[in-house]
Image (cartoon, rainbow, N blue to C red):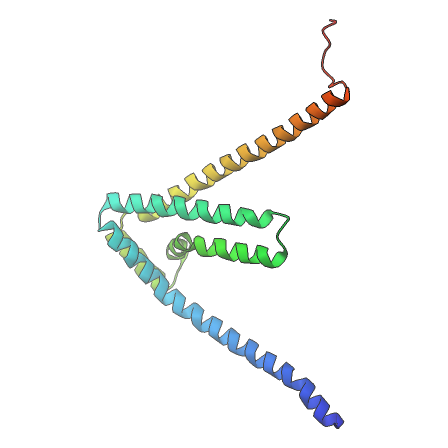
Length: 184
């Protein structure tokens, strides 16, 4: 095999990678523009049809989506902090959590977006699901407080268990626990 043939074979995988990366970037850009135009309109119509144009429906569905699709992603994302998973699993867990958070992220995209799709979604939510955006935000805040409180309880209980185990081990070994012996 000549040097030019070896160089051509070595360049072939590099060319293939560059082409695949270029195609991937083009597809991502096209997907972004499609999603920016389509998803806000689609999501607002789904929520609007569930709410049936009523304020009460918009508020209840907003609370439902806000709470559920905040708690679930937080519980799943919390698993990525475990030491037993390698980084590939952790990335997969975080991606799964983002997928679970999609309803709240789509609502956030409608609220914060400045494109035509976002503005159309805002008008649809105002008309067909009044109260949904505010209730969704309140649901997210409720879920975050609940998750934070639950996390605090779990952590404090775990720490208390460790302390109790240490005290019991000291007691078994005859080591004083540092308390008073009643000779005051």
